[in-house]
Each structure stands twice: as C-alpha cells, then as structure tokens.
Image (cartoon, rainbow, N blue to C red; front, side, top):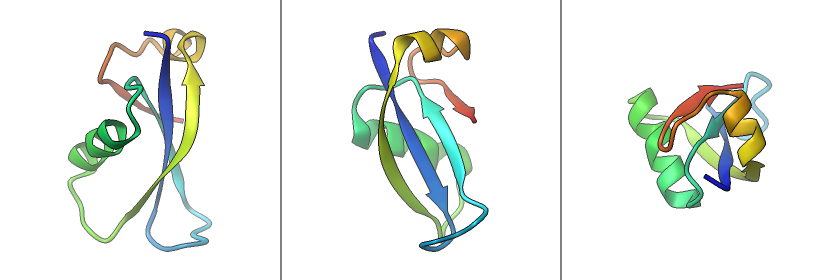
Length: 70
C-alpha cells in the first residue's frame, strides 16, 4: 500500500476531544466509511485530513482496510 488517509472524528466543530484515525485505505470516501462502520454511532462529524505514507501504515502494522486510533 502506497498511502492511506488520516480521518478526524468530532462530536461538533471545534471539539477539543477530537480523535484522529489512520486508515489503510487510499480513497477518502472509503476511509471515512470504514471509520463510521467501526464507531457505529451517530452524531459525529468526519473530516479527511489528508494522506499518510505507507511507511506510517507499516509502522502502525496496518493491513489494507485496517484502522488505528492515533
């Protein structure tokens, strides 16, 4: 895998307790969908923060489609 996505999850805009996930999926919409499926809760906002390198995914030991809270 060449790269993945960094997804921020918040309860509201400006949430100081936002959570960031590294997702081993290069497509932004699929990455957000994977995080939504994992969290299975409503009332959250999802924001794609950009790409993460394959080196980071390997360091986090993420297989394609896997998610890690960072």
